[in-house]
Picture (cartoon, rainbow, N blue to C red):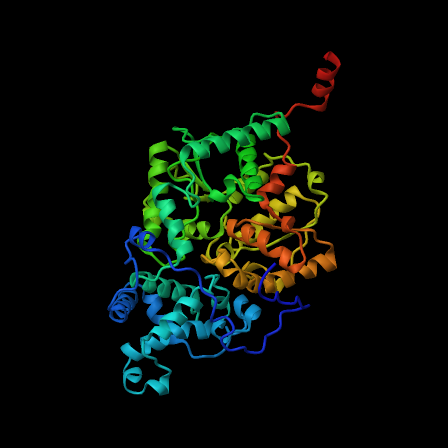
Length: 508
C-alpha cells in the first residue's frame, strides 16, 4: 500500500528518539508558473530571492506585531517539543515546533538583530542560503497549523502563524505549493475548490433531491441561487459528492426542511474552505471571503450559515468581518456567521427536532475535535461551546457515545494529520505518520469501549481519515459526519406514515 512503514500504535503516545533528517525528503510539489501568477506571485524563483525574502519578512513583521513577538520571545524551554503530532509520528527533530520556528528565526536573527550580525554562532543565526530555503519548503509544509503547540507554550507562541509567514515569503519569491495554490485559483475563478461549474452543481443537487425523496417520501429541497431566501448556506465543496461529506449535506437539508426556513446555496460562492489562510495570504483570504459577501448581497439573504469545515469556520468566525465586513445588511438578531451545528443545536434546545436514536444503534460513536474549531474558534454564547455543541447534537441523535481520553480531546485534541494544506497524495507518508497520535487515541476507545465510528465536523478531517484509517487496520467508513447522524435519526414530520403505506398497498 505504501513505500514507507506505518508507525506502530502504542497504548499511549511516547516521546520518540530523535532521527535527524528522516523527513527531509518530504515536500509537496511546487506550483506551476500559471498558478503562481494567477494569485499575484512570481511564476518561479526570482533572481534576487534572498533580498526579496528578507523584504517580505520585514513587511510581515511590520504588519503583524504578533509575528515580531514570536520571533523574539522563545526561550527554548522545551514545553512544545513533544506536542506536535508530526514529531511524535516521524521522530524528525525539525518537526518539534521550537525547531520548526527556528528555521525562520535563525534567518531573522542573522540579518535583523545585533547579536546575529556580529556573533551568529552564539545566537544560532544562519545565512539565508539555498539549503535553508529547501529546509523551509520541506518543514513548513510539515506543519498543519493546528496550534496544539501554542496551547502548551508558556509564552503563547503560535507556530501556525510562523508557518503561514514562511509560506507567504516563499510564495512571494516564486516557490509556492501546487496543491494550495491551484485550489485557491479554482475557488477564485469558478467558485469552489473542485472547479465544479454551475450546471454540474445544479445537476448534483437535483440528484440529491431525487435520492432523498425516494428514501423518505419527503420532497426535501437543495436550492441553488434562490433569490430572497432567508439563509445562505456556504459549505465545503466536498459536501457535494464525497462520502461521508454528502451525507452531512443531506442532514443540513433535512434540518432546514424541518425548521421550515427558506435557504439556498450559491453557485458563485460554492465553497466554504479558504486555503488563503494556509499560505498566509491576506489578499487571497480576502478575495475568497468577498465572494461570500457578494453572493449574500446578490441573493438578498438575511443570514449566512457555514457547513461542517474546520478551517473555514476559523476564517469565518475569526476573520470574516475584518476581511469582508461589515455585514450590516444581514439580520442582526443572528450571529454573523452561524455554524450549522449552532443552528441545529438551537432547534434541539427549543424541542423543534424529533429523533429516532435507534436508527444509529448499529454504531458506537466517538468525536474528533477538529483543531481549527477547537483551538481557533467558538460556538454559541458560552466558553467551550465548540466542544459541547457538537457532542450535544451527537447525543441527541445517538444512544451510544464515548469520548476519547481527556488528553486527546478538547483544546488538547490531535490534528488528523492532513490539515493546513497538506491533504495531498504527494505527502502521504507525512499524513499517515502524523495521524499516529489520533489513531492511538481512537484505538483505545475501540478496544476499551467498543467504539465503531468516529464523527467529525471538518471536511479535511473526513477526507484524511477515509484515507489513513486503513493504514492502521481500521475501516475507511469508520469516519462519519455529525449531520450524517442527524440525517439518519431525524424524524421528518411530513413523512408518510406506515398507516398510509398500508392503505396504499391495500388499495393497490
